[in-house]
Length: 270
Figure 1 (cartoon, one colour):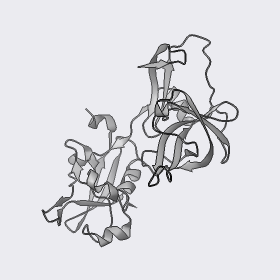
Figure 2 (tube, one colour):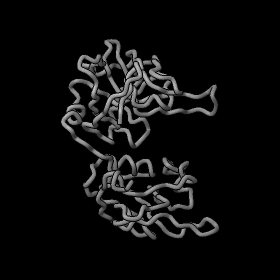
Figure 3 (cartoon, helix red, strand yellow):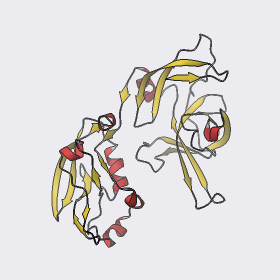
Figure 4 (tube, rainbow, N blue to C red):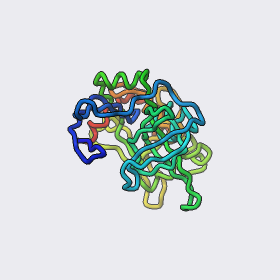
């Protein structure tokens, strides 16, 4: 791994610490002593404050883009991103992720982590950009500097592409469907050897004419009610790898409580 500076030179990079949950890492770059750098912000931003994002989106190297902080404590509608995420109005594009968000004082207030596009055409598209907040007093930054390496917890289930539109299915729509009378999270595949497989979770199975034959509907995690796959992801991400959670499940009309131990993401990627 290496880092390239604006003069085209490359330097070796060492990963000091990282946190999958917060999409943030601390690295050490072997640049010469005296190389200039941007300092971390001394305090967090306020809504309405100006923000300058610098990234490589669209193939443009170190392209600056102006915007403002529009929210300071959001989840970006993504289970991967915890509360506390900063929302920006800067018109970022894929490729800008990982770039710094700079405040008026020339300090790094955040790191771009996610970009969400909505709208049906180029003319109506709306862009919302999200960043992980970083300050000199950040407990997370201090942990990463100490070498903490934290992976996101996973259980090893997925929702097939044809079902992705039902990722955050509302309760009333679920009840009107053929999936059952009690809304919850369902899934269409279980990864062999995963925590889900070891716990005996069963994916949905349908007949040739689309009738539901079997499969689990997860209705709660540690007694916290969930209504769809998105809720399930958020509930799991509140815990750490190695923790055991209890799932409330409906299977063939019966209520079950199933213990499941969360695993780090890397164990399912080997």
